[in-house]
Length: 94
Image (spheres, rainbow, N blue to C red):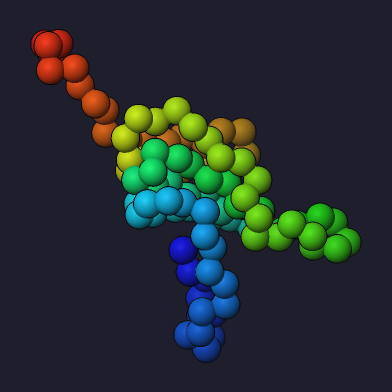
């Protein structure tokens, strides 16, 4: 993922953490949450430690549980909600 300065059009940061295509993201003033074809949701720290900023732009959490790519996500102060395709058992009927 790339972070761009809207005044200059310059890339200010490259975030690497996913091992496949990023399919969705959302952010606020504290965190960036991204979902990927690698089946993970990553939560990035946009603030860092109080006073020093240490850890800013670091991955805070890697959320596992999807078995296919994460297609969309959203969050609020209490929850992160994500969705993906589902791998269906070919012997199971809908």
